[in-house]
Length: 485
Ligand code: ADP
Ligand code: GLC
Image (cartoon, rainbow, N blue to C red; front, side):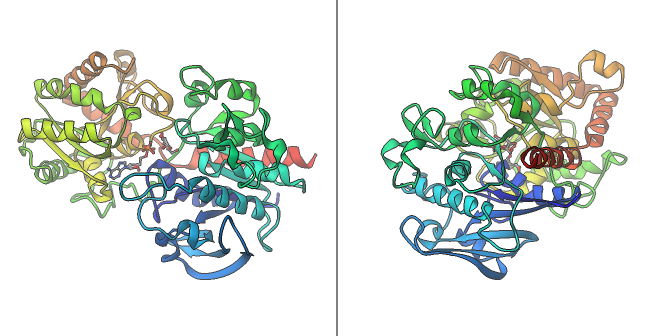
């Protein structure tokens, strides 16, 4: 069979620019898919961080006017990734976060910035770049949602389309009077088009018009068809159920490898878990808490937002301390949570350590040094930090939702009886159940042979992209077959 060619269109990509797991996934997919015979290239915006990293760039497409200025597509490599970079300085030549200014205010021209990315994605999909005519265009989240619409309304023979939902909470809704300015035809305005509760819905358009919809775990694929999880899109998603599926994310097991990780003080693996101990002391030192081998360290690496349920951790600090535990947290986001955690650290010196900010190296140290990693999300499409935690032997304490439910095996008595169990799972997400989960984890930790067994199970879990890469390859292949028959 000929290699399937896929254009991935995405608004952030690790290691060049990242605000969350979306970037990790976009950065890992091409390599993972190459191993199963899929050639993926990625179209990304020309933010300064990306254009600066591009090597041997070659202009492959010129656009006289892309929503207010000239633009071009530059093909090249950066940090091992094969990219098409949308060079449009009037839209993307701005430093910092890809979506908002330094004060956290969304760029007012976001609808045009991401419509531009989508429009160029469609153009390449239609053969705009000689030498890479994709069989499938794969978009991610609302930012690239209009790609499917531009392809649909173009009228020419189009490639297959796949839309992946990484997070349904962000939908990209803009005023309907932008329809013409966004170069969408009048007939796009309707329930079968881009119309969504009287606005233009970027994500809605992708979910309505893409040939396949995937999300990042099987459980989240089911949750988004319910009133509670669908966030207004449940009806549409339920109607399209035959083309909706869930494919779990993996992590890059070379970047996240405790046996070789340059960002952690001592290396270890499933066969040498005791070599992990110096990392715990280093972590305690780094956070300015008491260096104590016996204290159970609970770690957090997270965006601080309602989704992540960290208010439960804040409310549960006392329960962590009452089981003799310590808390270390790295995160940024909601002002209220930031203040709350700073206050908790000040109130419990030596036992609660908090770093506000984004710090890749510190994230690795937390994974390598904590005994348990807290991920009490209210909803979680997949979640990557619990996968890193498994690989690093930090036992995940998670809610029974989305990808957390699909990746962690709760260490209940029956599971332990058969030698299984990689984490502690609780439901529903509320402070009382969180407290109970902390207490259960602490009693498992007190039984060190059982805890070590769990660490081994966790570290032996396959969190690589292998399984899921094969699923994406099959999805593309089926789609190409279907469209050519
Ligand atoms: P989401 O994308 O919803 O934030 P994921 O678990 O899928 O959640 O991905 C989060 C990614 O961002 C992980 O790679 C995690 O290690 C990283 N991360 C989150 N917060 C921080 C932080 N404050 N510092 C460093 N890395 C972080
Ligand atoms: C989103 C989700 C997260 C997922 C990530 C990558 O940010 O919140 O659960 O792991 O996308 O798919």
